[in-house]
Figure 1 (spheres, chains in turn purple, red):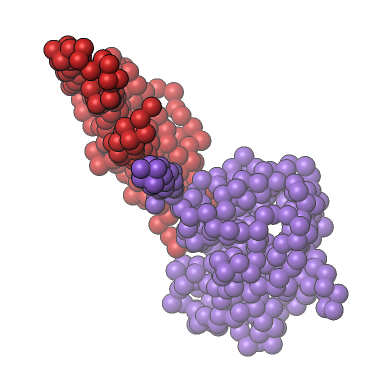
Figure 2: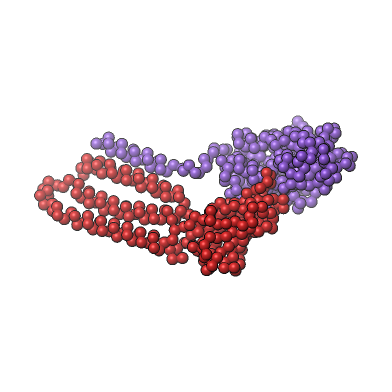
Length: 287
Length: 229
């Protein structure tokens, strides 16, 4: 009899444990390291003004570089960023397979990307632009690009905009993995133009004075709103970094960093409204 | 206390607890907007609980071994009385509950498919769409609506860069707007004063003028917060 009562009690406890399990409708909580100690941050290496790696020194300069270091020192608890170079088309994969805990790498927030990873921001806003050699006066408006060879970074929203936007079927698209390759192709006259975010183009233009120039009248497509990438479903991380971004956008550090790296641009053209950062709830569909 | 008797009780108490635990877990999972289901079920559960408690008490009294010296003095004719009383209480509880839920309480109306969206298929900054609330007048006082902005284009952060303003139009009269609503966020609109019709104007404000979005209804529920609304 004692045995039977033990079995009955054990069965009751087992079922009670089953009942208390989480339901199928709730997303599974994936294990991820906390935003503390040393974390991998996926970054660019070849973008002047944004994230440029000085050869041999393992030191980055630029707005994005200042931002990931700022986040590290201002977070609670603070963390040390371990920079992991990531090409444009590798950024999402780094977050999904765990090679990076954060992406701070001219990473445009899009509704499509938000279904696969978590995005926080924006912290910078820009639009698509076109750059040509400073000496090339052939291209001034969209129709001037007819039949021209245009380089664009692979895996970027710039390529999506070129494929879907007003310039599609008008140009020959040359996708390249690295932005710096597009610049090299443009300078060596292997392509006629290079298109990506205006802010990135301004960085290259500042680094190559007199050799490269933006086409002022060629601005197209939806805004590119740079955000910080987090692994799928990291709502707690999203809330924490959104709070930090609000501080960053209001305490004067944003203006200081922007003025340092883009002294010839008007900050208000690129600064997001701190009251209208994307709500983290939009990321909850990510698995 | 007789151990065998105690073990016998476990055979029906444990399954009962397991069953109730599963039921409660399921009811909790249905969420607040399923009040129309959870409330009557909770009532049924509470009535069953009462019935089971009463019957269990009677069963226990009947099944528990009495001391030998009192065996001859048990009056079997006294047992049916509590049984009849318990059955009467259960019957009254059931009838009263049924009357309340059928005649007084108005259950929620799932209106996701019933709320019509007019001019919401290609909204840009400054555009306006309209929600037509079903019923003339609407059959419940409140409308809970969760809007969803679907980016038409392949790029752009259009859902995050957009905010909505909801303006109720009750019997043709505009009410103060509810502003700064984000996609996928529930808003609750009071339609209480409507005697003829209720509509809702939805104005889109987008940071990005190039964005084009479609306004969809993720969920809409017409409900009352009190049985007497």
